[in-house]
Length: 289
Image (tube, rainbow, N blue to C red; front, side):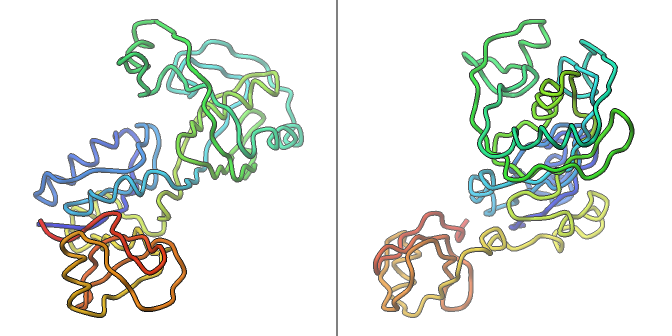
């Protein structure tokens, strides 16, 4: 069975689940999941996990992400992007310098009210289901972090390209909406491309067409997700036996505490573990069926 990670450059018009369904057909396996959902209009980096690598999805979802987004000033929609219904349209007399001047207000830890057109559940119901029924419910503001925010290009009097580096849970279209509100003319998102997620970039991605041709050979090893952690190769038969049985094992080296990629004596990636003192404890195993 196929095991590993594939970084897909998601095409516009596809849901993240559409991509997984396509890959199930290409790889002839059902065990496929993705990290970090992209809306249909968005393109770019979508990490997809296959086989045993699906155990790593939770580790991939929480990291920083980077986007290149199109901000359109003067237009407010019910979805906060150009695919929604227009609510207001206003003349725009904002200069690039004025836009850049408000961006520091949206950098660092900020509060966002999730859009009604989102998959967040309130009382067991997804917000977008309620929104499609014409209903609006109160949503609690959520704290997110914007690590970097800059204007990359001015396309027209109303359209700008922004680069955003942000935490998990950030709604870029809400960011565009809120920037427009701060400028007094309204705004929404007209394009979105994710350029980095889970530490993987567009340069490491492949298209679905390339996947169709290359298949399983294009899968990355599961341990590539944890390449920022140091590695540790087991030294003794007893260490490996304890590790493979899910038990903590001891090390003799004086190593700094933290997370480690653990490899068997033959070089097989076994697990992600945490070292405390001289004891290595598994966080997630990636061997076996």
